[in-house]
Length: 188
Image (cartoon, rainbow, N blue to C red):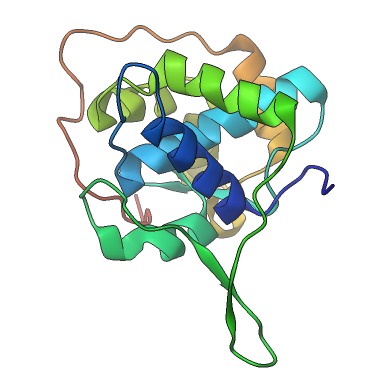
């Protein structure tokens, strides 16, 4: 059995599978919403276990944290509910293969909790939460305004520290509207 941190695309696939089988009916998830749900799952898992849920780094994009590998895997879905699943590609042969989904009860339970807590929220509300003052995204974006921030990466150390204390008020209306798709932050 593989152990965390996992391939982020495999965790995204598992999140999508669990959302499709929600007790109250299938939960449609766009790429933008998937990015935020995956990041919240990663952050809460990091706090709970001390271990990252996914490999690689999230980046601070316009509408919040984005994992570039997951974005690339699902960008063809644009702003529509994701119907496909991410695959891997052998770099030597080019052969496409199915990604191994984490077979860990703790991870499945954790992702279900994230879906119950955040899955019903609109993409705009998820962005509002991701943009919380003093949260990981805001910390990296603000740092980039005054110093060098390599690729606007959100280190796990910042995620861990900021998630511990992050408090968010979600109002009736999203502060950013309802964005369809995310884009990298370029110059502020």
